[in-house]
Image (cartoon, rainbow, N blue to C red; front, side, top):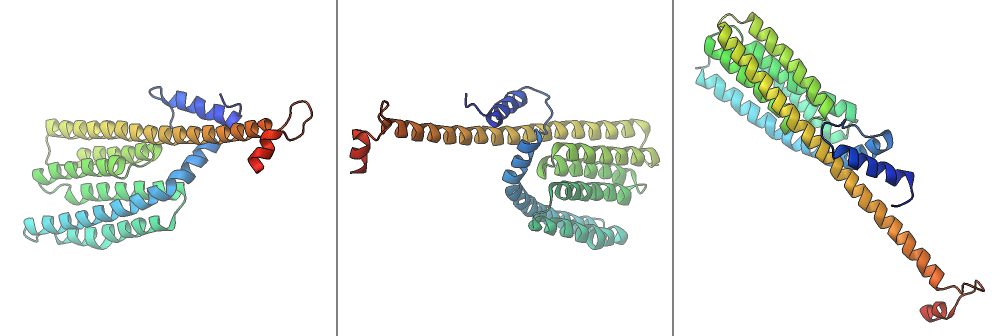
Length: 252
């Protein structure tokens, strides 16, 4: 084992995260290193995938409007003139390499805003619209936890907010009967549990991958140091401490 406390900490964290149901956050120096190593690629991915998602969302909004015969002008205005600009601002801010707290909170709030606004716009219209609203909320959960891959605690927070929104929506809805409401809540809870579990697994694998790469780098640096030390020892006479024949031959 390489005799350094940093190396031992990395090994301990690899062993800990290799066990199931472990806390994902690493000790402070390792967590900071993980953030520095992964943040550039993460914000670039969030920007690209967020832009694609916004484009798909607007295609859905327009199709939904025309399929309904152009009768829901208010929903179209809110989605195109409020939700989409806010989402574009949040998405564009990813290009500025924001802090982790801003980055994860902004994506979580945007995801919750999309899901909750969908519930609000579709509530108390028809039985079909009420069922359709719950499908939209499940899509928002999948988007936040699996597509955007929010860091675990932010994914958990966003999921709880969306679940509370679902419970309020179901409580106030006039068109769904009790069995349909129970089914909707069950589907939402199942979607949240599955996507949160997937999110945890993704976060765990990301940190394990970082720690394994860090361990390899530490081992490589230690091996280079040992090789240099052996090279110096082989060039010096052990009795006199002077350069030996091998040293002169290496220089010539």
